[in-house]
Length: 157
Image (cartoon, rainbow, N blue to C red; front, side, top):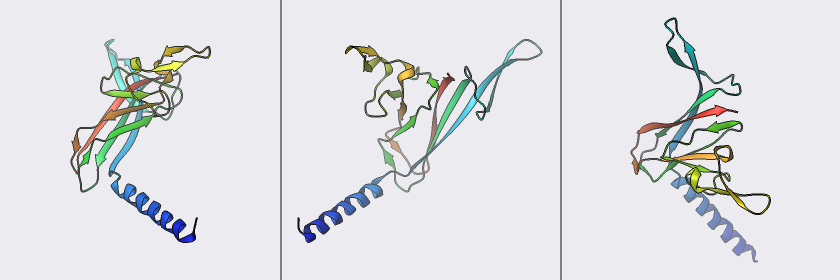
C-alpha cells in the first residue's frame, strides 16, 4: 500500500469516526439503587421505606431507577436505555416493556424467548439468573429537555 493511500484511508476513517460521534444522541442517564425495608409500626401495619443501597445483604429487596434526559438541542428518535445487571442481583422481569439479554447485549428479547446451550449439547430456557443486561425502548421521539425514568425491582442473592 502506498503512503498516500494509507493516509487517505486514515483520513476517511477519521471522518467516519467524527461523523459517528457527532451523530450520537445527547441522552444523559444516571442510575440510583435503593434497598426497600419493610417494618411494622405500633399498630401492626407494614411500612415500606427506601434506604440508600450502600449496605446490601443477601435477600435485600432492591429498587433500581434509571433516569434519562435529552440534554441536546435536537429530538432523539428510536433510542433505548440499557443497563448491565450487577453481579449478584436477581432482577424481577415482570415489566412487559423490559427486554433482556443473556449474552452481554448481543441478543435481546423477553426472558421466555431466550435459550442457552447446555454442556451436553442441548438447550434450556434462560432464567432471571442468566440476565446480563436490561433495556427499555424510549418513546418514538424524545424532545429536547424531556426527561423520564424507568425502574425495576431486584433481590440481592
